[in-house]
Image (tube, rainbow, N blue to C red; front, side):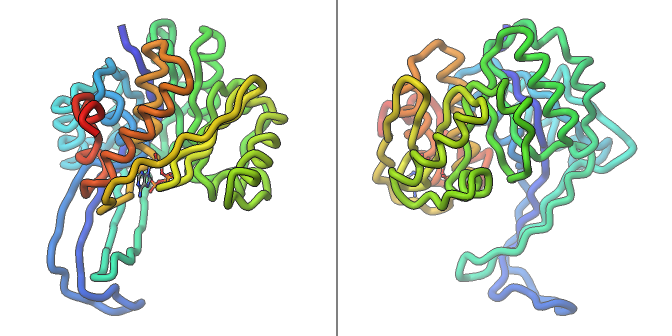
Length: 301
Ligand code: ATP
């Protein structure tokens, strides 16, 4: 029985380090190159699986070398691949990332195959919607796939976590199905027009999102932790005092962990506390999926 169902993106990160980023038309020499698994859906799947969830991932990859790497990664992380669709129509999604000595980066994301995940393909996975108590969604695939997944999960009575990243306008008919909406500060501002800088502004933004039909709003606040609000309670979870070396994928770590702990039936405050802790562990390591926390590490923190 799956605990967490994730419908979303898988992207291969191709990261080069270089002293200075190239200007248009310029070629620079890199000092280090790495390929690694990425994409919000893939990262969140790894985060939930490492904490012990049975994760079923619905995504689309190309029939190419990066697709083969993806399958190897899913197997290594214990992510079920029953609904991973392979296509020859588009390559596996990629992110070309250049990082300079100051940590500045330039990124070109080509969603490729996962950008073509369709509502019909999500519907073919309908059986798994009957079994998973929690569905986790982000916005790197087409909106048709996102809305179909929410519709199926809502009909089956599952709890739906929507991480609205990257930002795009969302219809109220989708937000009304969402149990937990998890924007970061920027996305909360983009969705509400309220600049989230402190607890008061977070509360103002959350109130607007609740009025659009979401059941609970969880705004992640980077190193400051997260702010949580619904019609019954509101609270802040303070950030963990860790030495951050790479915060890329922190939001994915938080969302994957939240889905895991919610699926265990844990009470909301406790689930947010542990998701916050799992995300804090992930920022102490470089990379995205490979940086995700394991359960025993949360106990140690
Ligand atoms: P990203 O886009 O980098 O993946 P995000 O902007 O979606 O991240 P954030 O709000 O920056 O998400 O961070 C998500 C969570 O990660 C926070 O709620 C917190 O739990 C944890 N976190 C992020 N940065 C730090 C940090 N410097 N120290 C401790 N915890 C952190």
